Length: 270
Image 1 (cartoon, rainbow, N blue to C red):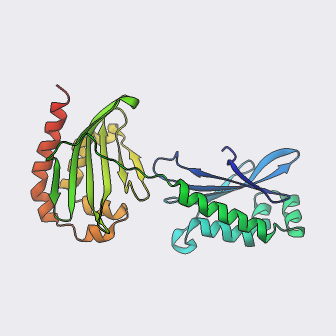
Image 2 (spheres, helix red, strand yellow):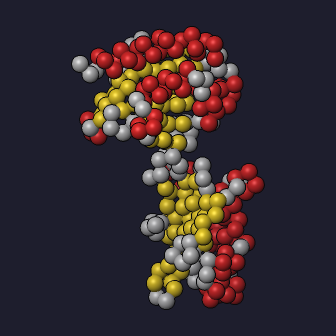
Image 3 (tube, one colour):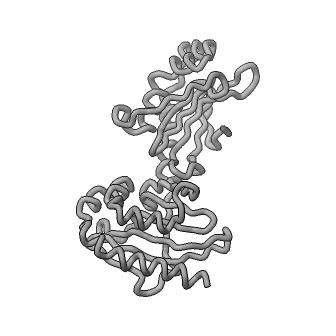
C-alpha cells in the first residue's frame, strides 16, 4: 500500500492520508501512521474508513493483523479512527509490534493541535473527494423514459469509444427533494458490464462475473421480474422510495421495458 499523499508530521510518527476510490464496490479515507524504524519509513497502522467494509491494520509491514470495524457499535468509521488516534495510539502501536515507538509516544504524546489538524484535513478530504457518478443519458431517445409509479426507467444504448465499449443501460430514477436522482444504474456493456447502487450516493459499483450471471441485460430484467428492485433501492440508500414502490404496477410495466431494451440492443447491433 502506497503512502498517502497528504502527510502531517507529528514528531515520532507521521500521519498520511489518501481517499481511496479504486475499489469499485467501496470507497473511503485511508489514514496511515508511519514512523522511522531502523532508518526505514515504515507503515505502523492503517485505518481504511470505507463505506461498506471499514477495517484497520496492526503492523501492515509486520504481522499485518486486519480487523473489521462493527459499524453498528463503532459508528462512523472516521470518527472511530480519530477517537482512537487521540486516546489509544500508544497501545495500538504496541500491538502492531513496535514497543520502543509505543514507549516514546507515551513519554511524548502527539499534541492535540496536530490531531486537530489531522481531523480537519481528514473531514475535508471525505467531503471533497467522494466518488459519485452522474449519468447524463446523452444517447437516450425521446420516449424511452418509462414511468412506473414513484420510479421511472431511462433506457439508453450507450457508446463509449474512449474505452472501446458499448451496451444497453437501464437507469432507475426517482425524485428526491424535488430533483431527479438516479437510484440504480445497470450498464450491460460488452466488455466491462457493471451496475451501481446509488450512483449519486455511495456509488457501490459491482462488476458482473458473466460466467455465473450469464447475459447481463437478461440478468437485470430477471431481478426486476423476481421482485428484487425494492431491496436494491433500499441498499442504494433510498428506503422511503423503496417502501412506496408499487410492485404490481412495476410488474405490469416490465413487458414494455423488456421489449424496448431488447429492441435497442438489436437496433445497435445490426
